[in-house]
Length: 562
Figure 1 (spheres, one colour):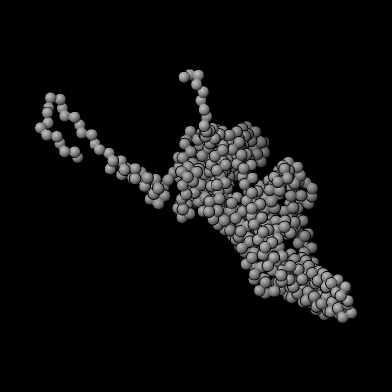
Figure 2 (figure 1 turned 90 degrees about the vertical axis):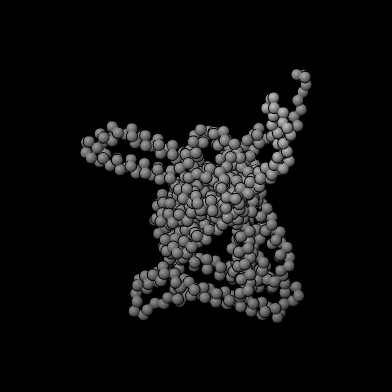
């Protein structure tokens, strides 16, 4: 018997290799309720940022190329300051717009007005930017004149044309009309620079560009080279946010509050659904998840902020205490004698920052799984990171690689769906736009032509009904594309919830199915129903065994069964 071989009929890979639990995150993330919450988070941040942009003063908005210039200054490629560069670019925009106002005769010179006074008055009108509608009227009239001229030249040449030359004349007419529309669009975009660029729109587009760069870098296996994954990740986390913090601080504070509340509300709800889904393979409703997130809103919102507040508070205390160094003779002496306290403060701040950087992704899953508060989230995330740093790093790398692969798959899925839709819809639309181009391409350019999923309709050559149709197409297409961002958000919270379960099991030896459940009948109904059914069956089918009589006693008659 001892020499008999054992046959392995199956391997529980999740038990043998716990990190394989991370591969469940895709199936968990594509659940409709999580995608809906991720979409709600994305839309709340986007439209909230757009509203702030709309209300923001024109002169405090961004100028073209501002983030790229900030990056060049930060890297030492440009020795000027960003403020001086902004003033120079804004002055150039004002001068260009002033010349446009003069060229179209919107602002005229008074007979008794000097040239300097006239120029100053035009610049003042340009800074107000209230004459854009008048400028547009002139651009539109110039466009209509160019179209009419091209059509007239074509009609005149058509009288003496032969059948061989007519197609060439038609191509020339269409090319002239297309050039007129392109010139009008270019001039209008140049004129609208006087309005400034919204800070949120500038920041959002920059961050989206970095995400696209990361995806392209992964596709082409460009990880560490110039303009590879490393550069785009650095730009995403360092360049864009720091530009906003240091150069538009007030906007950053307002937008951060909006972002933090949206992230806490909808992100907390996604984490809660993922926590129950991972542990019990059950799906709670969106209403239950939102009720949980609202009840824990303060904890979700404060968990990532408290460590930063601690670091800032310690730093300010050290700075205030260092003021005694300005006292002659005794000040430097006291600073030198007590400098060990400053070093201790720096040590504590470093521990907090490293713990926050490593354990930030575990804070929301802690609250969602344990039903605890922000302090427990900070304590557990810090302890797990410092107790098993290499295990945490390994899980993070696996999650990043797997997440990148699934994101690319969903990106390609959406891209292919849009390309196929554009192709077959275009087969049924034969009408041309006013610029003689393809109507559908003006209303919705193909992703094959733009090279990206997002786009902006070309409203200029469209008639009134076509503009409305293009607006609706844009809404539906962008809503469809937004599910890519919703999936990324859902995948982020789902993956980190699984990583939290794995780290908790590794450090605390807690089972993966141990999750906090609120005592509500809706959430626990399946479990209670199963227990009740099992109890009922046992009661009906079981027959109690009668106790034997005491020794020496003979019952006169057997007792009837109960």
